[in-house]
Image (cartoon, rainbow, N blue to C red; front, side, top):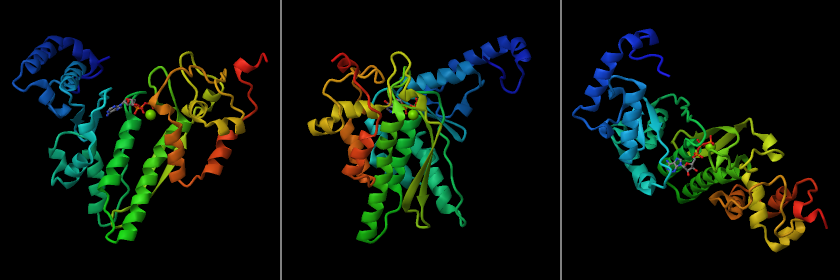
Length: 311
Ligand SMILES: Nc1ncnc2c1ncn2[C@@H]1O[C@H](COP(=O)(O)OP(=O)(O)OP(=O)(O)O)[C@@H](O)[C@H]1O
Ligand SMILES: [Mg+2]
């Protein structure tokens, strides 16, 4: 619902409707094609319709990022767009003298924060807030930012320190598959929906090299373990274990092949997130060795598979 237009209250909107329509027509018939408006502050008059029309036109032209003053609006392309996220493009935004003059991109936001830390004599923490409805692309965007920093953060000169920095960066990136395996689930809105909130802190030293990361999580939807809405699923990790465990592990974890569990609905749904190997590999890189992993995976109450109960 339109509440305010150009600072006027909704009462005056009704009175100014013909004027607004005229403004809209003028805007739509303007010289600049809508998809070329890369900043929503250039939209005039600023109404829900003009803003949405502009974003729609950009979306149709495969332009998924649009500035709105100092905020960035990111639209979910719902398709892979590899050229938009290459390390080369990251370096281009990093090397640009004025990244804000390049096409709107999440890398501009990342680079701006990086420069803010760098340029200040007394470094000040920088925060990037990624918000949006379920499925909007928040997790994707956060991952993108982490990859960006791993690529562009300064690298130490010596070979040994360089290797350590690389390991830290790799560990930071590996935290994602682990967090997502244990905290994400398939919902009606998003096959990889985060069922928790998180605050990721990336730490840098005075030479702008990444030295570590800390993740604080909030409000994990624990009830999902025992109760899932129709057509939704439990946390990915359970399906990963059921689908990816080896024969030996099945024996060890009392997990018969083809077992069906009432708490694991819709196992037939195959998702790219069902990859147990990726989670295990990431856990290994994070320093969780195979025996510890095994202890984690076998922690469970005794559950009798549904299709075994009659025997
Ligand atoms: N920039 C992008 N490029 C390609 N695909 C994307 C992009 N952003 C999002 N997606 C796709 O949309 C899906 C949903 O995005 P994501 O999981 O990041 O949403 P979310 O905002 O974190 O949702 P939730 O609040 O449910 O966790 C991703 O799994 C991915 O397939
Ligand atoms: Mg998410």
